[in-house]
Length: 317
Image 1 (spheres, rainbow, N blue to C red):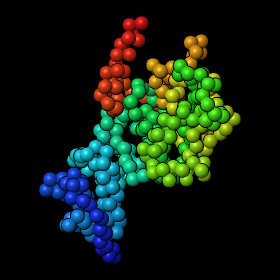
Image 2 (image 1 turned 60 degrees about the vertical axis):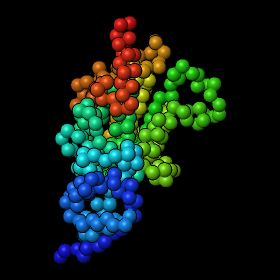
Image 3 (image 1 turned 45 degrees about the vertical axis):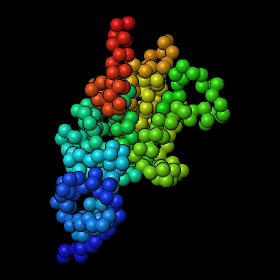
């Protein structure tokens, strides 16, 4: 028996509607056709009529597009197709390598072939090591993947881990107790989470320890089941620490290690656990090693040129 149609309304100011809906409603038409609803925009109000699930999907996709519009000031045809795919749960759209994240009504898509291969490795393997330069999306995509697993109830916990290794500054000279001292080292992980989920949700999950952020040293002796465990800045783990981290993996868990070989802050006498792992574990079944490069950098284009300059100098040395 067909569901009784419903009508939902949303206030959308004219200036926002111009961006969201596009010239002659070119962005609105694919949404209408994809979800089988009837949208009508008049007097700064959008009314959408259709079956309740379809109307719900329409507004979820629209919210994703509003997030994009507020961030970039424009909407492209690809943005519309990616929003539709995200709402429909399509995470394997060939070249785009879309990863859908429900938390905070945000979605994330890969932008390079390297990133797409990274996401495919995350989907296909229980353990993934990703090596690449700054700005290539190593941590961002790993956190997005972890959040999507949590939202899909594929895991019950996310653990984000970082080595507290000094990069030119001594940890002991920082003010406060140990919690205050290690805070700056964990800040990039908090920032990545804040991009995926709204602050109240992050706070709730952290208070209930559904999401945990901790220094690498605090992982010793633990076994984590039904969890997604991410080690960021893996190049600053020692060989012993890397072995310790990888063996924390319990039943039905996923492990991701990310790092940049050009940013090792360990003493010269210590071998990087990441450098050791990519050699030692390259033939281990069930574990995938992914390499990103300058072509995968998606920050300001200047970052690519800076990374290249440092890399060229390193090769000359």
